[in-house]
Image 1 (cartoon, one colour):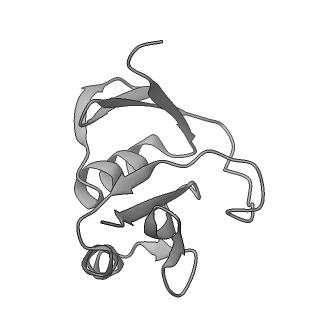
Image 2 (tube, rainbow, N blue to C red):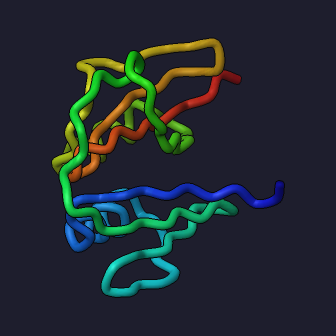
Image 3 (cartoon, helix red, strand yellow):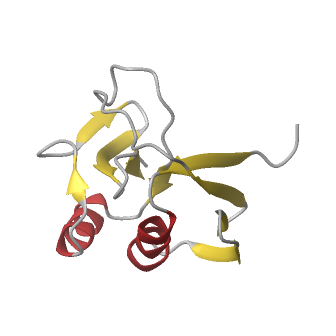
Amino acid sequence: MDNPSTLLVVHNLNISKEFYVNVLGLELMEEHNDCLKFNIGHHIVFMFQSGMESIEYEHGYNANSTLVFTVQNLDEKIRDLKSKGVVFVHESPNQNRWGRYSAFKDPCGIVHEIMEFCT
């Protein structure tokens, strides 16, 4: 399989567009009244409008999908996103074998992560 992409289903397409473009800095490639198409480097994210809000779940314990955005400086990016009103799942970053990371919620309740890889 070539060129994987991601599908996100959100409760409010307009609020999500504002967040993903102006807060996360994703490139909006296409916009239609019921869907959006974003570019993240070599990765495409398709976003569709749903009729229901996302289901609350415990990130890291319940099965789900998460976009992971790599950053050079995790602490700096956390401060930047918090200054823009982004809500984080945990008080402080976590660490795994690949690096440090922190989970946050988009306006529709979908959880994503930013990650600083170990060198």
